[in-house]
Length: 352
Ligand code: DAH
Image (cartoon, rainbow, N blue to C red; front, side, top):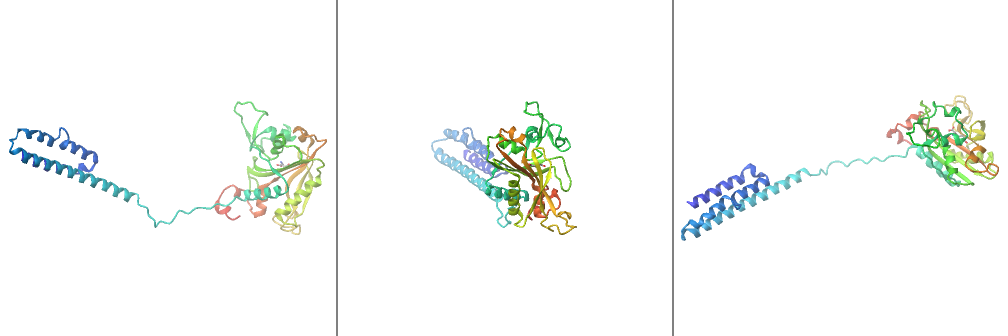
């Protein structure tokens, strides 16, 4: 009787262990509890062993233990099988296809503007210049007022300047702008306790409301400032000549033309001789037959600018210049549309 019950339990348990629902380890554990747990089916039967006669008990007891061991083995086998299956599945999922071609690593190229800036920095550092920096978002004080450009000056016109609305906070001047010129760095540099002799350049980004094939709302300039005793206009010319010779070759010639800037007196514009035609071609696409190409604005630093920065204009004089870098890069690399410089098309930028 008991023996039949025991055999039946083994059949039931083994069917359950082999069934689909036992494919989860949690269920398998439930099956183990159902048969071998404290209140399990097999345990129940073992309790009944006491009702057997002394002759019957050892044989049935041994048989019951055999059944118990078998069920345990079945469960252990199933456990092993499940964890093997999981492992195999994991292996399959995480398989790496080593025959796939490797990811291409794109190597970039320095932007033509950055190349020009680095080249110019090299030249100027070689001449003993320091590199000054200033913010691209600037107070009107540094962008205009301190540069002797009072409020009614046309350069401050809303047409040319990107104004930024301030948000409640108290600031030193009336407005904040995207700097329209790197000349603001002249003031910041002198205010920053840099005393003469000063030799400083400041390359950087500038912005104006302007957009066509030769004007971009964002552009770049390099500013220069030299302040010392006995600085004269000839020092400006000699310095710039040396720089352009390094950039474009020994034959380079420059000329100064009178001009007006609020922060220099006298002021000049500097041209260099067309390196394409040298003035010999009336239909030259580069200089338009002029023979000269306008490069930059410059002059002797206005006494008011020096005085405003705590430098005595009776003792010190200086020259300053500001040059557009985008046009320079366009010239150097024969780029005909300024917008190419800002579209960041890697196929275009790779060429330089
Ligand atoms: N800031 C001027 C501009 O953007 C260029 C310039 C002219 C800079 C004369 C100077 C200077 O430092 O002395 O048009």
